Image 1 (cartoon, rainbow over the protein chains, first blue to last red):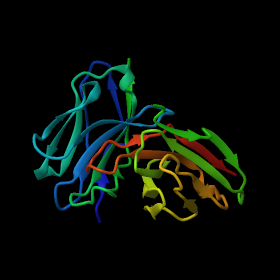
Image 2 (cartoon, chains in turn orange, blue; image 1 turned 30 degrees about the vertical axis):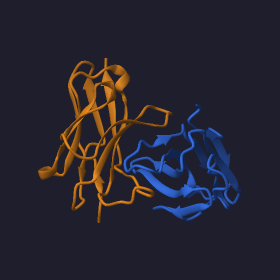
Image 3 (cartoon, rainbow over the protein chains, first blue to last red; image 1 turned 135 degrees about the vertical axis):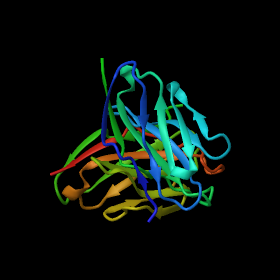
Length: 117
Length: 114
């Protein structure tokens, strides 16, 4: 079955430290990939997305993600974390070949990020 | 633009009661959807609509009804609430045209069923 896996349920980092959140998918072809952030009590905000081309994608708030086909991964990174980055992060995929009109997002279970001042 | 709005923000129901969660968007988006978020489960799709008059089921549709009479509104109805429906509900919208268009989420409705 197709799935999205975020192996880490909770990660704690110190402010200023680097961050990498893992995401793996189990689709046969290259899916369309997204990362969302959810601050406490808020809705989801899109950080970045990957469709094709350059495998290193730049997003908002200094986030980037790298698509690695050989590892079926799309890990989210940030060189220096700020206290305001504390949130829950969700990886989501759309299987390649999905219709443009009715494609569905499948979400991972999320990784909660805590930031120590 | 207000974006995607949801009402109420919080609701407590008794088992068996019915209610409607409201969702509206002012971006003229064709595609709208409802998700529920439960701890450790991520977001799961309940129902979605690709335009006025067209709805379809998602991953977890049981116990929920939807309709789409206008482009702007996409209400979610619980006909007989159950404790298993305690969750946070998110409405989302996007344009239909391009694959991968950004999906915009509302702030959520927290529902507690006793």
